[in-house]
Length: 128
Image (cartoon, rainbow, N blue to C red; front, side):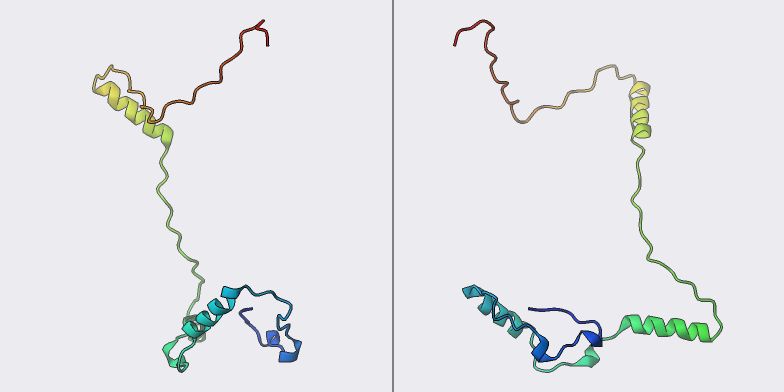
């Protein structure tokens, strides 16, 4: 049973925690859990390997504010996909066909699979 804690008030005394004695464990689950723990466990935690980038950005903004600079919040920039006006594209395509003098109708798409057969209807008045 894993849970990420974010605040100190979420830390409970060990006596308060449901230890899961009523939980039913399948044979491979315990082995998988132990393998996961062994894979994630390191010899020694090295906190200097990690940087709190969010904290650094906040402190930089605070320092800019202290210096009297104007601080504005910049949201994430979203790249928008190019929107194609289908009606305009169709008009351009037709204009090109007319300009080239093409009179031949457009070819129909070829079917790759045979169409499903329609169920046969019984003739009216037929006896059963």
